[in-house]
Length: 393
Image 1 (cartoon, rainbow, N blue to C red):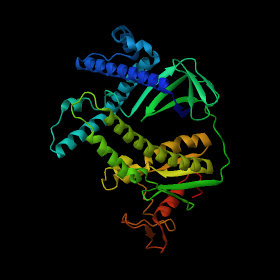
Image 2: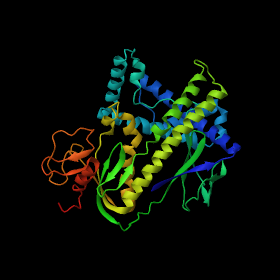
Image 3: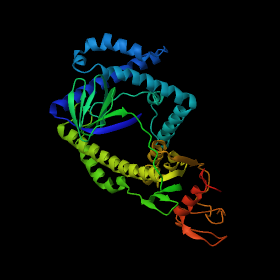
Image 4: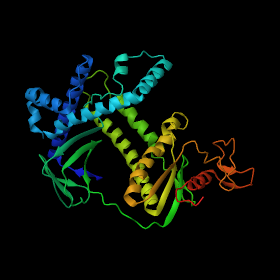
């Protein structure tokens, strides 16, 4: 199956209904989190999704009649999400990931000479409460769903207009989400793998900060750096938002909410620009090359360098790898991931002599053995290509 997501064009009534459904789903989630925490504090067994749903119908819906104004699927699905979230928590607890997060939190608080709240420490990794007026919301619907060109019919809402043509296929359920002040709908469609005739063979891809991707055939994709380009405007909008915030107030002013929407919309724009560029790059690679060779980058470790963290995260290296992995399956390409300790930048692509020291400021690789001078990133990309499964070497 393949995911499909598009923007909805809702009128005022439909937008109000969407906010209502999102509010019901959020209330159900928060109630489930509170109930599970209460059981955990008493050292009792955590309830299953079925148990939570029965209690939700028996207690919560009875006390809150406005639940019945929305589809039953919105709160019901949150009970399944809670069970999935706790399953993931126990897996992370077993693997040691949760303990690592706790140690990192404690070390940061100690380094800043701040008090450590152990109630917060004990809840790290567990499902957290969701607040109202957040930047995003989501809810789930299922039932009789139909599509007609750029319209989709879903339970409770009826026909909704979309911003693009919809695929003609059977849809069993949908997820409607909000980012800033825009609504989106997503669902699964059947995946039909495409075997495309490739123009090129294996290609090595070296990811970097100055140039996002350098290919072994010499093609360069420059880094567009959307966050850096919009950083100044984002700082200005966040300053306005901060000035309109009334600390301790239960309800914030309309001006604060308007400022928050502007900040969220700019964040969304930055993410959209980055995703669009990454999608174009990964689609180009998987459609035109039979094998793609990349490095297994430790992005989390690289981002701990505070001088480079912003530029590294602005490139979206993890998202690049995720997209390449699933698009290779779509278009019949092979993905080869080279070990992160392979010295692709320090190795000469001609004589394979390895340099002991190569500074980050050295953008041109000079080989002392054979006298080759080549761009640093291109040299690394050529070395990665040699690691391809289809390579004769």
